[in-house]
Length: 197
Length: 93
Ligand SMILES: [Zn+2]
Image 1 (cartoon, rainbow over the protein chains, first blue to last red):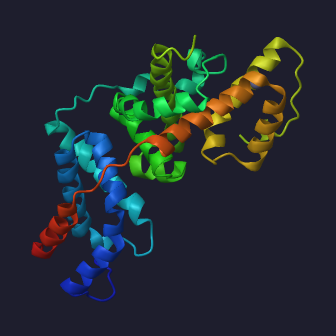
Image 2: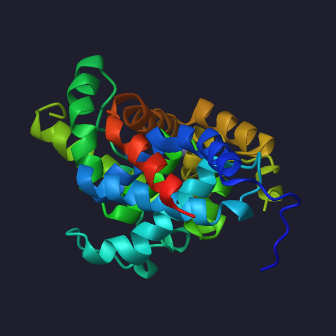
Image 3: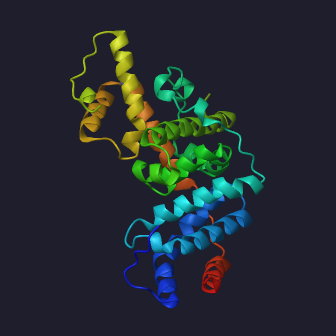
């Protein structure tokens, strides 16, 4: 790679710019790390590692571009490349089996069009609200990831594709599978509480 | 890809109806995530006005998204984290 930073920043200037542009992302980044690792200490380590890497590559970060997406991408790569190995969380899902839902017929199943489960009333919503976290945490990490990125952090499909290094079509299918899975878990809960009979 | 949705759909047979609902199902996520094109949106909205199961699927999908963004508690960032990041960066040459 060539060095192309027009003027050389002093370390103080660089640090100040780094803090101003990237530290505001700390909160969503930590939450993302926590949802990936499901452990506060691990999230702490992962976020620190992410910021140190970002600092090392800060010269390649274009000012004014999407700092949040950039940091999320670094964090996700750290998680996959290094962190997952030492984490207690087993990596267990092979997505080659499940990504192709657009070609299969059975996907909608009970989670889809025909379902009659009613999760709409207020009381059920309140009760289920407490269960959302555990239902989400029970999902495979790649499913959890797309739901967090999309529903909690509001990234677009295009941003998610960049963060995850996958095509937009894969973002869509993974998100769809993830939501079906989440829906299933929440519906099971609703049924167990007697709201569907 | 888009042109598929510009055709006026007709409910001629059970088969036709089924595949129409299948298309709607595939648009559910795009709709709730604000990623559907104008054409897809009007195709979708026209369909769910007439089709109760798809209308309900849409409600349910919106609810699901709302549960995550509205009910999932955010974890609090430990105060020491920002400080230790700053400290480690200052040490870095
Ligand atoms: Zn329909």
